[in-house]
Length: 355
Ligand code: HEM
Ligand SMILES: *[C@@H]1O[C@H](CO)[C@@H](O)[C@H](O)[C@H]1NC(C)=O
Ligand SMILES: *[C@@H]1O[C@H](CO)[C@@H](O)[C@H](O)[C@H]1NC(C)=O
Ligand SMILES: *[C@@H]1O[C@H](CO)[C@@H](O)[C@H](O)[C@H]1NC(C)=O
Ligand SMILES: *[C@@H]1O[C@H](CO)[C@@H](O)[C@H](O)[C@H]1NC(C)=O
Ligand SMILES: *[C@@H]1O[C@H](CO)[C@@H](O)[C@H](O)[C@H]1NC(C)=O
Ligand SMILES: CC(=O)N[C@H]1CO[C@H](CO)[C@@H](O)[C@@H]1O
Image 1 (cartoon, rainbow, N blue to C red):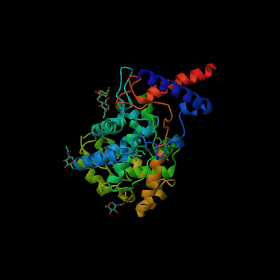
Image 2 (cartoon, rainbow, N blue to C red; image 1 turned 120 degrees about the vertical axis):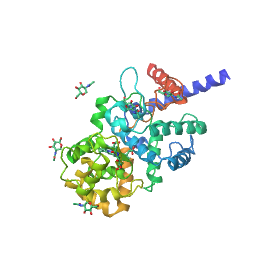
Image 3 (cartoon, rainbow, N blue to C red; image 1 turned 180 degrees about the horizontal axis):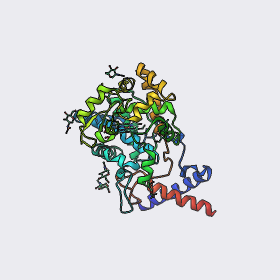
Image 4 (cartoon, rainbow, N blue to C red; image 1 turned 90 degrees about the vertical axis):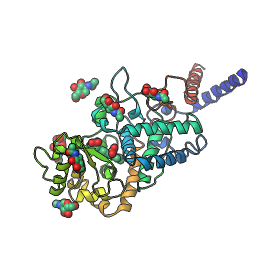
């Protein structure tokens, strides 16, 4: 037993030494999304997508709001420090985490719980081989598909980050709902997303809710003149004061269905946030709003394409990062199969360098 495992290790050391001498150092840096693939877990966890889909189908039957929570979680993860599941990390003694920055205050606890539940089910079926970042990306896709939206394929192979983003990085990555289109375009440009991506991705606001404080800046002290007057009157009943603790649907027409009605809202000046409504007014984004309001098939195709693009932002692949055992915390060290392989690989690289 001991000798067979040590000769296996020796074999691993030599094959990895060969590998590391023949491949470039790119595997240990922030890598290109080209490293993700549709078949990444084909042999390691063949039932992965079925496990995620069927668990969420059951979970949404009792809490449809969870779909919106999971979609937003993936967006927050990707926009801050890349899609590395950093959004899931609890803070530590060294400081507050991404979770603790103001935009995260309204991320649903149920969404974090669902990711941890999924990881447990996946671990039981396949062992600890699937990253939390990939689970978040798959859960977002299934939230869209199970709510009536497009069922796109998700390239996989993300690794989990070792650090959480600071409060400041979180604030810089996630624009405020009071942002105009210029600000939004500038924030997205930093991660190589363009005007068409901005309009398509904002269509995520076709499901879910917002708290009064996210939009009452448009009602008090005076009403934003771009807001539809009867829509504004309704919102004042839901939020009699700027800080009323109440919520309203992001898409008033079909609050829980993933469809193109969000754009119909915008055309009627019934967008909830400035960041929504300004997409209609700005000449760089307005034409896309009109197109998606008139053509749901086009919206679905563009949304799916932009989600795949967003899901590739700043991903860690190869042997960067780790496969977290617990999505809410970094590995203590050396626990997972993958971290053992990484250690061996490091030794192998050192050995190779010594020759
Ligand atoms: C473009 C800039 C964006 C801004 C400024 C923004 C802002 C917000 C705000 C303020 C809320 C409500 C928080 C609350 O009051 O509870 C919200 C909710 C939501 N956002 Fe965004 N968002 C943006 C982009 C996105 C994107 C790209 C997606 C996904 C593709 C997305 C998906 C969602 C969902 C699904 C909800 C509802 C969450 C729930 O019901 O729990 N958002 N967003
Ligand atoms: C975070 O941003 C605030 C405001 O811009 C600044 O005063 C503060 O020094 C920043 N903190 C860190 C740790 O960078
Ligand atoms: C957008 O908002 C920024 C920041 O508040 C402001 O400086 C800029 O003038 C605004 N742009 C337009 C076109 O309104
Ligand atoms: C919350 O919103 C509902 C629905 O618009 C409204 O009937 C209710 O009065 C609001 N609650 C408060 C405390 O304002
Ligand atoms: C305000 O909303 C109503 C109901 O959706 C719509 O009929 C009306 O045309 C909208 N007004 C404007 C100015 O868009
Ligand atoms: C996962 O990590 C979090 C944060 O450190 C901790 O509170 C929780 O108990 C851990 N869960 C398990 C199952 O170990
Ligand atoms: C869902 C979640 O983790 N929310 C956290 C956001 O930040 C506040 C303040 O640090 C925490 O109390 C919440 O638990």
